[in-house]
Length: 421
Image (cartoon, rainbow, N blue to C red; front, side, top):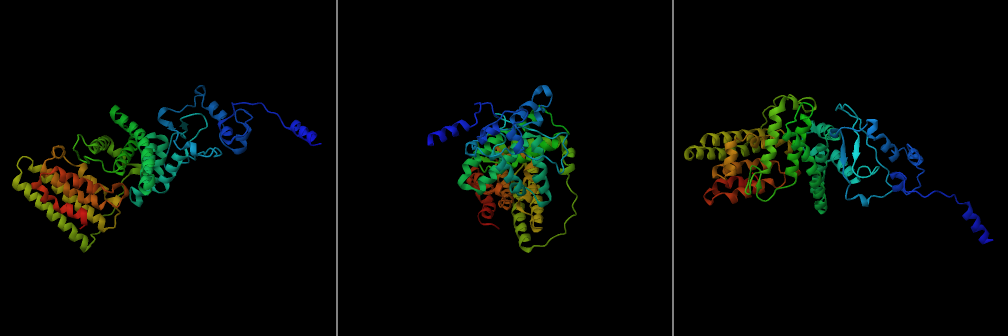
C-alpha cells in the first residue's frame, strides 16, 4: 500500500517546463515565473514592475529613452551579496513638493534588468534626508537641503552622487568602527559627483537652466572636502607640495557666481531679507572679540612699520579679517550654530586678492601670520562634524612653515586653539 500511495503522489505532481528566461524578480524570490508578457503573473500579484514590461517600454523604437542628462545610473553596491534575495524591488515616489520638473525622471539601472537600486544607496539616501541634511545650514534653509537638493539629484546625477558622498562621510564620523567602509563608499560617489560639474565649467555650458544645480553641487563638493578631513601638507589656501585643492574648488565657485549670481539666488535659493538684529550685549563674548581685534591691530601696526611693497593689500586683508570677526561674534551672540558661521569664516578666503594667495603659496611669513589669526574663526566652527580638526591642522602647518623668529607672532591663535579664549 505504501508503494502504491507513493506512486499516486508522484503521478499527481504538476509538471512544468524548465526555463532560465524568467523575470529577475521571480529569480530573486526563487519562485517559478510563467513568463507572461508584458508582465508575469507573480509581478502582477505583487504590484511590482516586471522585467518584461521594463525591457519593452525601454525600447528605443518607442521613443521613451530619456536624454543623458535625465538618466541617473546607480552602480551596483558591493554589499549586494549581503541582501536577502527575498527583498521586493522598491519603487520610489517622485511627487514634487516645490521643484517643478518638465517630466517625471526615470532612474536607469547599471547592471541587468530588474536589479534596482542597491540597498546601500537607499540607506545613504535615507540617512541624508533624516539626519545629514540638517547639519549644513540653519533651520531656515533645511527645506533646501532636505527637499530640493534630493529632488534635483533625480534630474542632475552629480547632486545625487554628492548627496551619497556627504551621507557616507557623516556615517563615517558617527560610526568610527566602520569608518573605512564608509570612506570608500564616499570616495566612489565623489568621483562621479565631481565629473559633471567640472565638465560644465570646462565646456562653458553654464546657463540659466542649470546654474542653481551646478552651484549647489559646487557647495556640496566644498562640504565634502572639509568632511573628508585634513590632509598632510594641505592647508586650504596653500599646499606645501603644489597647488591647493581648496583653491581650485574656490575658484570654481567664484567662476559660477561671476557668471550667474543673480539667477542662482532666486526661487528656493533666494536670500531672504532679514531685519537687522538688535545689538546684543554679551560681556564675555565682547571681551573675547576685543582681545582678538587687539592682536590683529598689532599685526597691522607691524605691517605698516616693516612692510613696503605689499603693505596695502596686507592692510586690506587684515581689516577684512577684523570685520569677519565682528560679524562672526555678532552671530555667536545671537545664538547661531557653528555651521551658520561659514559665511564669515570662508568669506575671508573667498575675497582674498590674488597677491595674498601668491604670498601664502610662497609661504611669506607676514601672510602666514595673518592667516594664523584667521584659524581662530575655524575653531568656533569646530563643533560642526565636517570641520573637526581643521583649526589645529592649519595652525600646526603654519608654524612648521614659519621661520622661528615669527613664532611669537602666532602665539595668540595657538593659545586660543589649544585652550580656548
